[in-house]
Length: 254
Image (cartoon, rainbow, N blue to C red):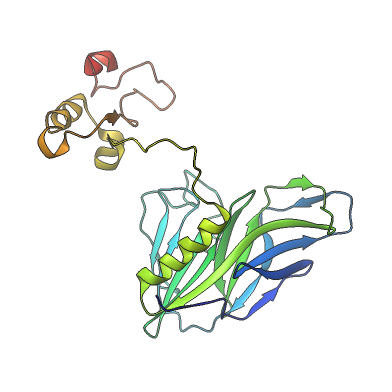
């Protein structure tokens, strides 16, 4: 694995102190106030990253249905529900595109990943403009008391540069594991099938029955079937079956 960590020049924002800890940027918001409120757009700083605009990108969203591909100048929503659409409205539609958790840019046969390696309190995201990558924290307007350093510890960030995207991701996940290691008391992950990823909200009783019949042979190890959305008449009317489940959920379960 040949990747370079933290080689991208970084300029902290005002009141931001940055140090290196376990090959990651440790970010602290400095304040002398007894309490301090962090806005939803708390700027951490910017990475100097000259670009043409035609570079390919891969970015994650705040929620699982939001991913972004395309290029810097023309980002394209990959998931069904972008974070800034009319349903989720996590941020305004006319605001710069946000890339939560991590952003990968391909440039001259090199992949550069900007990523938050911790999520102890806050969600972090990136924006691309002015030949820079800006890093933000969503402080959710929460009020905090500074710690012993007269600061509020935020989240950690890393940049990874490499010619192989898989190696870049492995370096990123290794850094995440430093902050969020596997818990020894967790149980074995269940093996199951979820209707959402095949049918979304359009699933029917016959779809469920058909898939259950296929759960033999190579699929016999499936332990659980998760019926996710589509069985109710309307969102919120969980006890009223939809027209695709005329006999209700109990009949399907039986």
